[in-house]
Length: 132
Image (cartoon, rainbow, N blue to C red; front, side, top):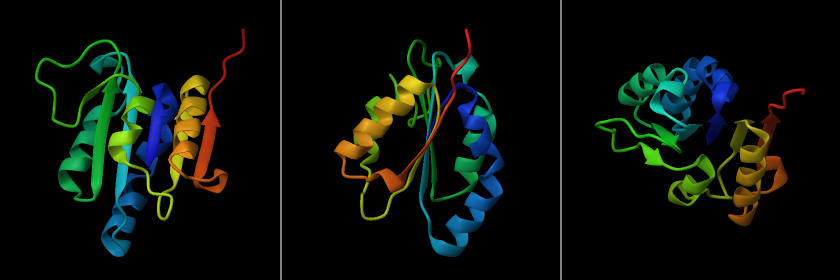
């Protein structure tokens, strides 16, 4: 699972070639939950949508807290990424979660993933904190 808000999604974009290889060669399944307020704030959404369309085994789920597109794709969700984790159904026996972005989102997702049975080694975190 790849979970991000804001510019936290940038590392995941650079991982697409390696993800395609893992999906094809090892049968890995990947879901990307990307959080933003509006569709205009979804960085690289066209790239992720195209990758999902071309790559069985990769699912792209934009999560929008304030505004949905006029004609949303079936995988678009209203709300925050952490609210969508139950639908993705993390499996402690096989899943690893990468969290990158807003510190509140990272903390909320980490707690939800722990509640779903994932251990600390399965939850990789990077928080973006700005100085004031």
